[in-house]
Image (cartoon, rainbow, N blue to C red; front, side, top):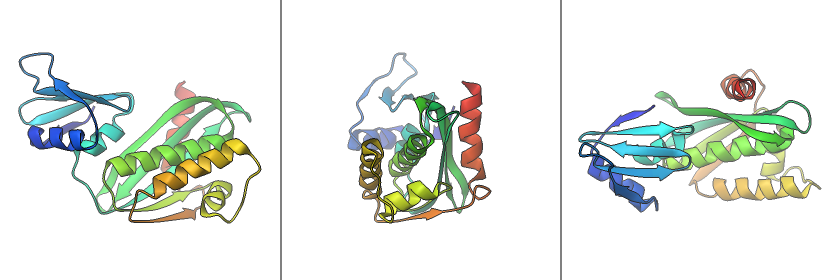
Length: 197
């Protein structure tokens, strides 16, 4: 449960600027509350507490970031299709900024890879990064998104369009294929989420 020490009025302004509805708190101690992307933020005098199954996106809106980030993603499926999960990590020169993993139901490995990439980009955008250097160990997904490979699968084409729309939010981006050992943490998060389900 992230606790963000901040000016809660400025944090409220950032949320409202992002189109998030902010409502009054439920108690005398709460200044305000806001829901966004499966998480809730509760503001007190000098801090905001973020709760929920996926706090990363809401936390990103509350923190003043910008700059450059390295984004790692991985999807995993047991069977093809089968139970699936995603993992992602966002890293800056200060270390890991955010990471997450979650089950996404039954799907194929390629669809899980696309879902992981999309989720990681959503979080990076919420954090306000200007440039992202994205890395994943699925050569197929990397080459499809970069336009080097095409796909006959309509569902993968739709996912590729969605990812390209998300990438367009950044001033600069790159997308590279890396070996699994470079993508180890995202892989671990996806597999942990799959095993925990």
